[in-house]
Image (cartoon, rainbow, N blue to C red; front, top):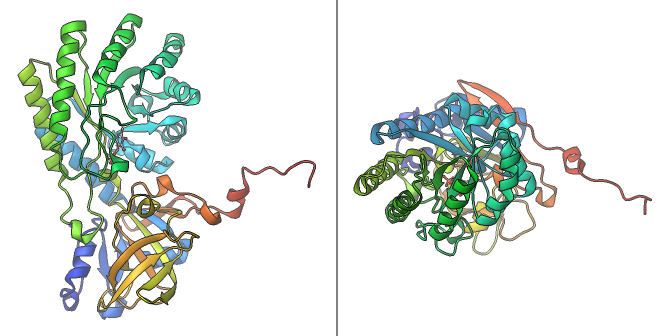
Length: 460
Ligand SMILES: Cc1ncc(COP(=O)(O)O)c(C=O)c1O
């Protein structure tokens, strides 16, 4: 829970209190003059106002304490509920940069990289080879080469990929281990675009294909050490992991009986959800998720007489989403027949999730938190798409132009999916820890936008 220091007169504002629960754990409401309008948000001991003045908007910030607490919560839950070996792998697709790579090693996390680009970032961030795991549904030659050179584990998505990997593994003096990605035919309850485990999903192999892949690996003497599946992202009910595990453990039992091979490691992927809006609270408890998975693996192995595998969980969003906050400046307000619009200086270019799959967010003004919440507003960005609306129909105070807005739960799948649409320059990213802010990614400049361009020659 955040450490609220809201002056007593503000405690009545239950809505503010509920929204604050979406923010990083270190959020406080500081008030120098103890008046409603001076109350302002601080995170990690830093004033968001002061950060906006120093770095401009939009900016993103990550609260180190919230990220640390999430990593520790996973590790403690695994230690409590799983009697075998276990590891937490951060899914870098949620957001990866050099600093985030460095942070993962504070907690000895593995890092899941999709392709050569993320592998390169992880390596630059100091993630050791022993903790790099590579995913990807259609890995390019460059992806495979980078994975063979830098990864401890490559998760093979399909048989064609295994055949393309074969000569590379044979040529390598230090070939990585392989895991095989199973498509269990069971998805979790989430948006269709985030489901990955269903039978017609583009990801992974059917159990029959996995059997063929195991035989190929054994014939070639490859170090085959694990099975992986992932049923989707942002689910709140772990129940569908049960039937998927049954299918995968049946497959393990059959493989053990027919080939003698058993996976050392088993990964049911990641995907645990978070609360993005006060209506989604309380935050889904990752302890419930870890307990469910751990018990299902232990019981499933016991029933089949299988040795307990090393259990790898692969969370992205539930590690990093709540630690991130996006801060924008309101440019103008506009009243149309049915709506009051607040236009901010970022939108679908830095956060495409609302446009992509209707993701629902909440927000607070950075200052003046003691005001009455009187207005229903639609918060939209500056981009040339009518779908560039970050938040619809949100109760807010009478926010004016030049005020700052903070959108919580912005740490996952925003910066990782951002674009330069309409020439947007990607925002500055800050790391907040013990009252200090560090710039971990500077804001892009026009020079960055032009850096890849070449002139036509001869000039037209
Ligand atoms: C293979 C794999 N592992 C892990 C994740 C992380 O999911 P999340 O960020 O929802 O935890 C994903 C996301 O889709 C994934 O595809």
